Image (cartoon, rainbow, N blue to C red; front, top):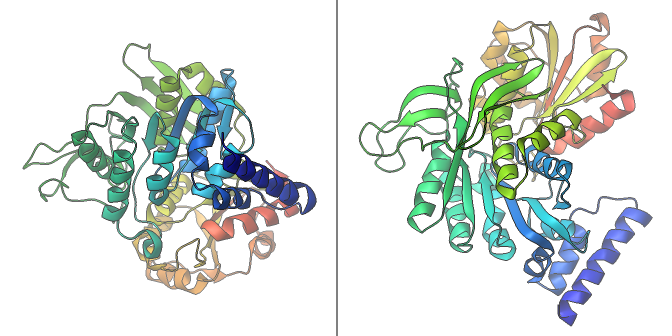
Length: 448
């Protein structure tokens, strides 16, 4: 390693030390920015510290949870792992994570979809795991076809990288089809049965990416995910290399039979999540076994997993259960509403939407959320908050739901004082509101 790279590493580590030890601040981004300013090629050099190589995880929803569970499972199997666990998923965040150790067996890296074109050519990962593609932050990311173009381009710049896709997502399958034409090896995971769930009102993909005909579905799991085929051409859901069968989803979590070639069927269970989590766990199993780990390692990681980043984190506030989760786009919020539907208790809901730059300033997506689902559930109170609270309030009014504006979680908890503590509160926030809500809940109570 040359002098320039050595200076960049030293500067990055000093920045990390100053931020974390002296200023007591987050050090997930700035150390990488400093290091890359001194050596723009540093990511590729740091990637060599992972002796086996790396796995990169990207997709609209579920990246952080999936990425961290892959890392947890590999560590449960005895491997040392480099991982950007806090979700800093652009180039500076990746470099900041890689600066933390001199060597490891494997790197497990979350990547922003638009950043893959910079991250993949530098890391040269063995596998890219593509979880799903939904509209998100339209003012920054643009429409999905632009995101697809970027990922295909990134794979062309890292020809040794194999692609692991959610085969149930036609938008992911379209990326795989284009990448495979250029020689990329593709593996697919998915749910191999009809869960008999109601379809979302506004799916992300209706038409065949190859010929434009309307896709036909044998069944849908949620949004555009399911078993699809084009009636006019050969575009269809790919054969599944990793599949879930006998799926159960409820308030107590998810469970399914994991079916993989040349491996005995294994029952997996996790005490959290909804249908979307089944897909995340399939991605975890695919990645872990490709690295050389075992399904038992995945199950051990699931049993030890305790969310700490606000995603499906549970709190106890004066005896009342409060469930905090991220909901940053229509599909994510619809899946949260499905979680509520699986909870047959009376409940209260607090929806927080900001329009800060890291959220996306265009919040028109709230009109694509199926808030009408709340009418069929035992929801006794609905509150809204954030910089766009009134926009959400109007959307709920059109859904036939009366919502009150609140300044924060503390105020909502106070207003629920006349309800029994057996009534849980679901707090659903987009990006910039998540940390504030988590801080309030931590101050009000503790992890449940």
